[in-house]
Picture 1 (tube, rainbow, N blue to C red):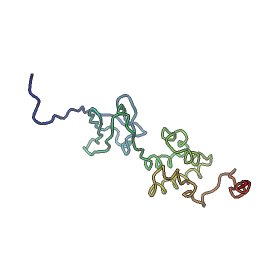
Picture 2: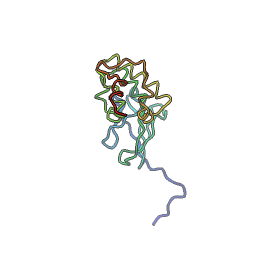
Picture 3: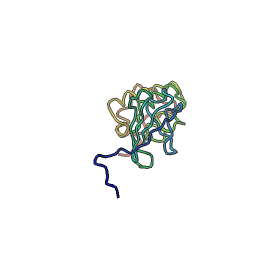
Picture 4: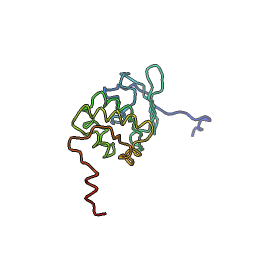
Length: 166
């Protein structure tokens, strides 16, 4: 048998991938969202056994993550997604990221009025600068702005609370 090499040998494959209009590439038969890649068209993907890296055609490192079959949790870039939703507010309910929103926030953004939905997306973008999505969900009623326009069928909670026997 031959001796193993003295220095580690990097084992990887490198190929080009095309980026669709949603900023996604296909890797291991799975669509993967690559933030900030939608304008590039084509990217270089370096694939290792457990992870992958994405580079622009100029060699700029764009993204690094685990391969889909590793079943690792991925962080969602909510700011990029919210910017896209702000441009196309009707797509919020049909987005592939909508099921990952906490229920309170999803219901808050599911209002029929498009101008009000845009206002709520802007509010969420602003609040994400200080808090993460789980913290916003946990403290939703404390963080929601009282100046936001009410839903047409909104409930006056002070009257509702008076009905409680306590």
